[in-house]
Picture 1 (tube, rainbow, N blue to C red):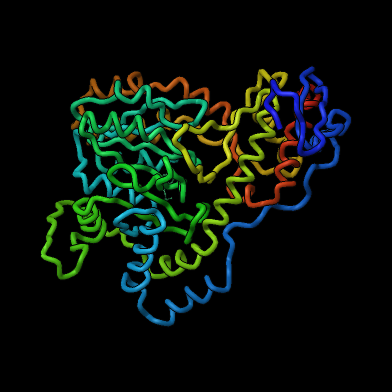
Picture 2: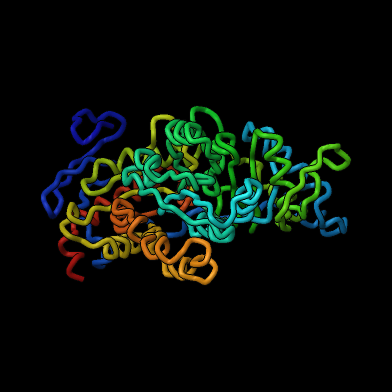
Length: 446
Ligand SMILES: Cc1ncc(COP(=O)(O)O)c(C=O)c1O
């Protein structure tokens, strides 16, 4: 297959279809889409039936959990340490601390660094609210760095300008499993001596320059909540290569206890909490890890195939990857939908038409830096006392993210389980998009 500019068509018979708004398209399975009625206009959906279910439950999972129930050892003892060992190895990291959730993994990482009132923590605006929640939990001031619209990730070119003498941590988020530009982010962080806490909650097995994203920076934090590519309902993990940081994170997450029982090393954590993982979660994670690499490979090859087709459709822009991203986890398949290039069809209409074709899709995040809960938190008694009226008053102005605002109007997601379907299904998804575009004018009127 060739790009929009290309002409050679080899693997399969490609056809061009004049769309209702005049653009030619070259995608497999799109034969005659101009003549086919979109499902939303009463035609036949491209796909009937659901996509692969998630989670994938096996008999081994059932036996593992039953085994823990029967043993009566439900508290951190056998499976949690085993999981920590296996997960560290899987990610080429020296240390792993299993936690109750991704949120607590991030919370404990910041806690271990001593982040507190008066500090600033840099985060991106295109992320799940937990990345922000943990900053607020420590009464630190969130500072947003705008998104790079092409990648959906923190724009590394805008990072340095956000650093002040109060910056205590930077949290790059590998959203959807796409990997932040770690070369540039780490170089800036090192120059200013600021720790980097990677939010890899959506980035299981994602890699930067051939190494797990979790093994770059000060810590890498994962979530095993139900929707994630590795899941146990709830759960999380902190990875680090720094032994002192491992001790501090362990102490913070486990009521100031020592990581290695009986060791001479005693880390005196001040604040701490209970964010321990249970044995049930760890046992389930160990069995769920079976086949994780194969599933990651399947998602990657399907996503790449889908991108090769969607890139041919004007107005559809699959998330670009930075050059150093050697593996995208594809927790989400993300693309931008540009309404102007779809004859003015709105994103809401597009999504409705896509779902009618049997393709589940959603609109993604709205701007986190503008959420009311955040503004309420910043205007709370404690924040105003710590930071002063003027800092809080000027905060929205200082934290504008215009590129992210546009991204939030354009973003579209397919969930990771969609990528576990067949290669032919990827063609049907592309066909559905082509069909919608070919009839965009008519769909816009319904
Ligand atoms: C980017 C990101 N960060 C943090 C979290 C928090 O993880 P958890 O739900 O396990 O607390 C999530 C979970 O959805 C996430 O997607």
